[in-house]
Every structure is written in structure tokens, then in C-alpha cells.
Length: 223
Image 1: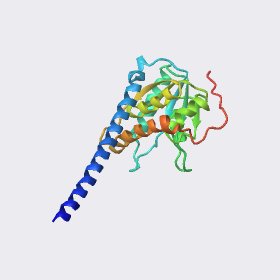
Image 2 (image 1 turned 180 degrees about the vertical axis):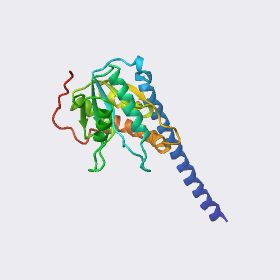
Image 3 (image 1 turned 135 degrees about the vertical axis):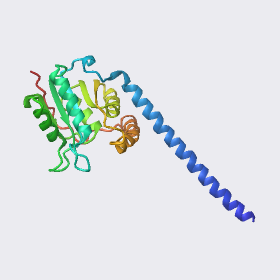
Image 4 (image 1 turned 90 degrees about the horizontal axis):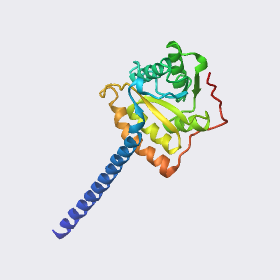
């Protein structure tokens, strides 16, 4: 009988220990998310008329289609947002940064085609094919393309993380908020973002992560 009680006690200790670890881990995730969001709050603009002028916008890439083969609303709304900035004279040039991991998957190319279809001249678009993740896109904007003062374009949840990274890299960046897809449409994306913000803090403050590729500087010519 005593042995059985001892055995149960051990199991309870294991459960308690795991519960404490889980609560601690979740607390860290919540705290890092609050930190990232608060860092970006004063740098976000959701009304076109209030956006300060910058020569260059950094458009963060995403896939043109979702897994069902339909138009990705995150893509659609980002294109609409940066198009509005350009045609209202809030920017003169756009760096389109994204992933091109396969011949058939090329975020910058697809976004460029959509921008040209919206009457944005080819000469006003620069493609960054090494924007494999948000950190790569933001840091390369400064270190490769020489742009520290920039307007970043994406959805709010994504911009919060991008601006957090930009601030740590001494960039004078603001964010123009593209329309959000309905929550049920991008539920996985929104859930994943909680962990992405946590990892962003780890990347910039603990791992001091760098982009996968840098390379030679590329000059952006502003007409």
C-alpha cells in the first residue's frame, strides 16, 4: 500500500512539474507578444492620409494562392495597400521581398506582376528573392539595399514583428497596415504568429540571427 502511494506521488510530481513548465513557457510567449506589439504601436498607420512620406516601401512577400488554390487574401490586400501608397505619392519605389524556394513558387515575381497590373512602372520595383523570412527581408532592406528609412507593408500582426526587428537594427521604419483577412480564413496564420513573435525576440536578442544570404550592396535609384 505504501509503495502504491509512493508511486502515485511520483506521478503527481511529474504532472505538477510539467504544468509549471507549460505555464512558464506560455507566460513567456504572452510577455514577448505584448513586448513586440507595444514596440510597434506608435509606428503603425492604417489611414492612407496619415502615412508620412518615405522614398521606399518594403512589401513583405506571401503566396499568391492559398492551399485550396484560391486567391490568398493576405496577398491581395498587401498589393492593394502598397498600390494605394504609390499612387497617392506616399512612396516612389517598392522593394518586393519574399521567398522563391521553387521554380513554380516565386513570391517576388508574383507580386511584381500584380503591381505592374496596377499601373506601377517596372522601374519603380526592385525584387529581393532572398526574403526567406521576415528577419531576412527587413535586415536585407538595410544592409543590401541601403534603406534605413522605409515604409513596411503587410497586415498588422505581421508588421508588429517586422517593426520590432527593424527597431533592433536601428532602422527608422513605419508600417502601413493592409486589410486583414477574416479570422476564420487565416486562423492557422494568426495562431502561428504568437510563436513567431516569441521566436523574433529569441532571434534578435539571444541568437543575434542574420539573414541566410546578404551579398553585395544593391543601389536603389529614386527618380
